Image (cartoon, rainbow, N blue to C red; front, side, top):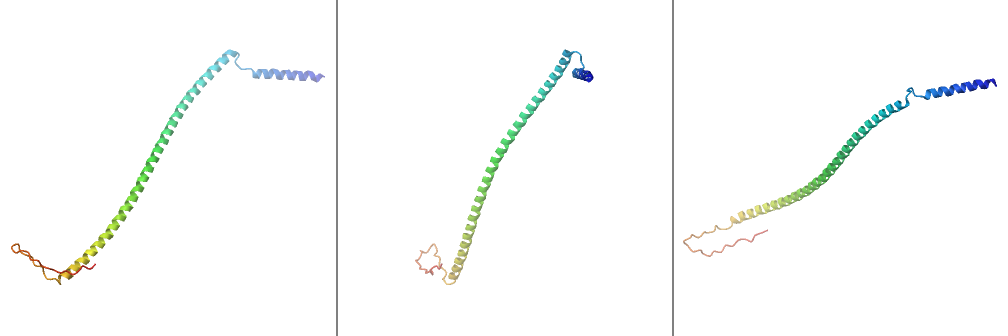
Length: 152
């Protein structure tokens, strides 16, 4: 049982050491708590300022994002309108081109028919006698000219 005293002494020393280590170095507990409160209040104030700055930055970023989104939507609507107008112009151009080509074909046919008629008139003019033109002093006589029937 002589070991019981040694164990008791070691246990007592361990409790005293733990109590001493747990005690703050400042002997005035109220002053230590006051300094700690001031430090914490300063830290809280600093964090509140940072929070307000972050909120302002967040609100500005949110506003900018909304503005950008609205601008993008407006540009999208404008782009769709421009695309629709371009398609309408393209269709109009195709219609005008087809119309022009049809008129060109018609004009070429008319020109060919006109040349054919001129050729027929020239051929017929060699066969017909020259017409007499009455003078203003003479009364117009009835003349009968017979023209060949037009061939088409």
